[in-house]
Image 1 (cartoon, one colour):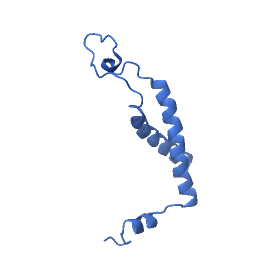
Image 2: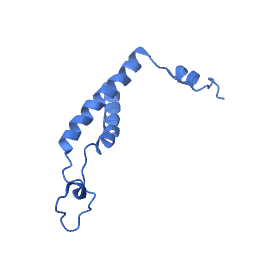
Image 3: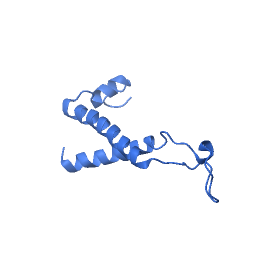
Image 4: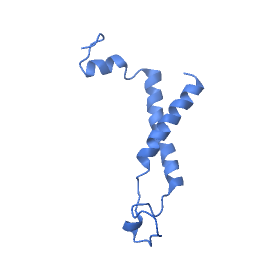
Length: 93
């Protein structure tokens, strides 16, 4: 696998994980009892903690990518294994 492919897969996983991590620990302006400036949504986060979420995203992505790469190198789970698990033969149903 080339370095460009590794970087592209890591980048894609990072963005997917980011959207999973974004809601962690969010308290809205309404929930935290903050004064809401005019024109803002009450559901907007009072403190988004974006740097903390970027760090968590990187940690989780590194773990997920390590699992993916180990499976790629050692062929722990193959397409044939998945086809057998779901009861599909090689030629279709």
